[in-house]
Image (cartoon, rainbow, N blue to C red; front, top):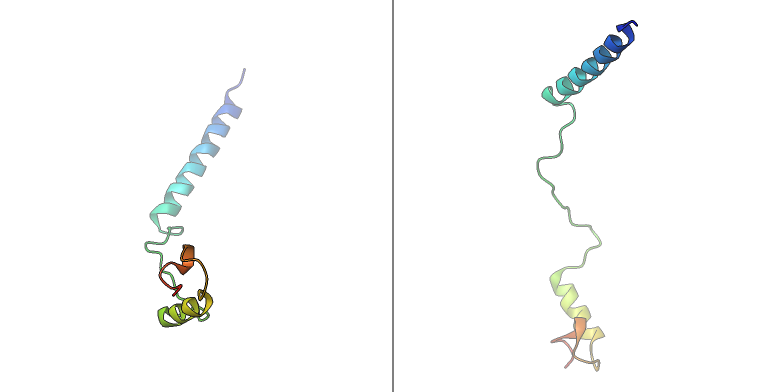
Length: 71
């Protein structure tokens, strides 16, 4: 029984491992170091949010989002 196919398979696996190790050493595929969030232009400002809550919560129960705004 010949062991040539087994050796060939082992060499292929070794070559694949070396290729992936080399790719990580050269920095081809690194995860981002820091995640930053950018505000959307449509996001409401804190002052606009307060005005909206005062307007929307008039006469409503003082619970949930309206807590402190229903007067």
